[in-house]
Image (cartoon, rainbow, N blue to C red):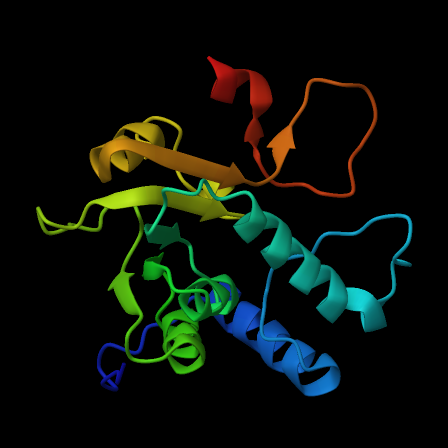
Length: 189
């Protein structure tokens, strides 16, 4: 995905994500941006991040219904989960608002991975782009609740699925170390 010098307006958060991805790849060999799946048997150390990230990908993919073959990966990040899905025989397309991350995802997942560039709310899909599953892997929190579920449903084949694996804010006392996410009560409503 080549970019011209005139259109090279880049968000500083995007640069930070790519810098983080490059550091994680250089020091740990990981190609994912997600936090990973941690449990008591895996100490919370930076050295264990690649194993936690692989656990997350395996957990997510292991919970896909048997009748799913085509997947839209919304907020596909650096393409790590999409790469796993493609290697297991799924047909996968992605959505990414970040040109820099789209480039990283394309390099990692390969030329067969079609990426719809732009925010999920704004991307126009062809009428034949319908999926068995629309997946939000740590990306749901960045999309307005006003439109996200309706748009996701419009992209599903009959009897399709929406998979959300993300953070939500609960109405509980105390502070969380994780700051993102929609309010859970708003999501349920």
